[in-house]
Image (tube, rainbow over all chains, first blue to last red; front, side):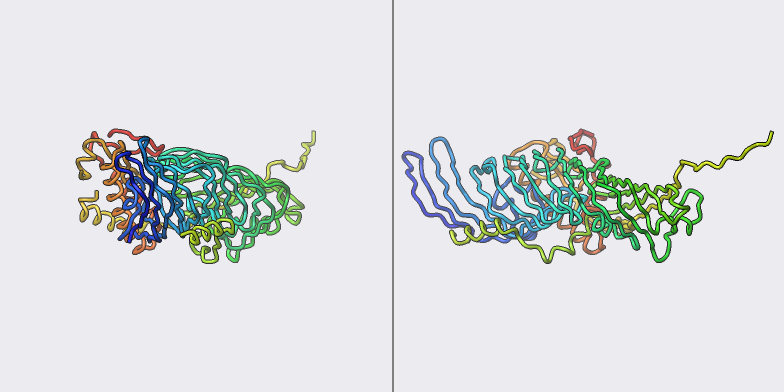
Length: 320
Length: 45
Length: 86
């Protein structure tokens, strides 16, 4: 049963009002797809799984259709180009079906957004307007640090558009864990901006720069020194000695690359090791490149939908 | 005159570079699968 | 409306994420884009799971092939996101 409706229709006047109720429908790329419910959705999302349900009213008159529907999203996952959203939850209100439109202030939570960077615990306030998405505000976590997004307006097919993520005191230790470099420990916190540029479904990060917010310490003591280590002519063990207990005064992290391919994260550290040539100045540039976005899938088991969104989903169900 | 050798603390720091590539080679098999797909599913491509 | 005609008439174009995008609107175009893309994504996911690579890697591979060998006169999306006629 796709949906049930009760109400009245005055054929002479061409007016009417229906109360609609669509019980939970489960999406599966091999069976029910979003475009089966609404034509346009197929072009904006692929590989859709998870469930939706809807309830509300559909009135019509001479000026046309006037829907007021609540749509519940439950653990919806979808991809658009190289961006993947995992487990979207929330209740959004639709006030127009063709084009699709919501009022301001819709809120959803997303367990993970893979857009080159593995963003987790995302919440976003937005408005859907035909084929555009207006994001009023969004928060996300990256390596245990909190990011906030400036307001942005994007085409739903992510063909173009930009968005800036602001980073405030993101601790270095978890970020370094994300890079998975054996023997590297870093203390301190970073701040700065990550500009995202959308292009044909891809996410391009052009030279994002995060800076340390004060002097701190880095220690790099791997079991076996990697052969890629080059110290400008110095022997490897001398280089290792320098990095064993490194007090940096400035540390810069740059991020460059595309969601569809490589992402390169480089740590530029300058400082000294008091026990190395009595504090002779040293600069250490560590660059790591690879597909970082896959690191997040494992961590989703413990994900909890934020309370205020879960509450709205409860009310939706009680109403249905 | 006697050339004097002055030892000043050189200001140029020692620069250490380390480039790590998280290996993710697109295996040849994937290339072949893609070719087969483009062949088998002409209706889609 | 089938894919070849839609491409030849410039209604849809190839994107380098291995999917097609609507160059012009319209219900029929949207239905074609939705059907083709979802079946393509299913194939990409099958290959990705089989070979243990991210789906995006398969998408990128197919996208490059399709954009490079797109027939002259058909549309392809440039890396900066605009439609260009080959």
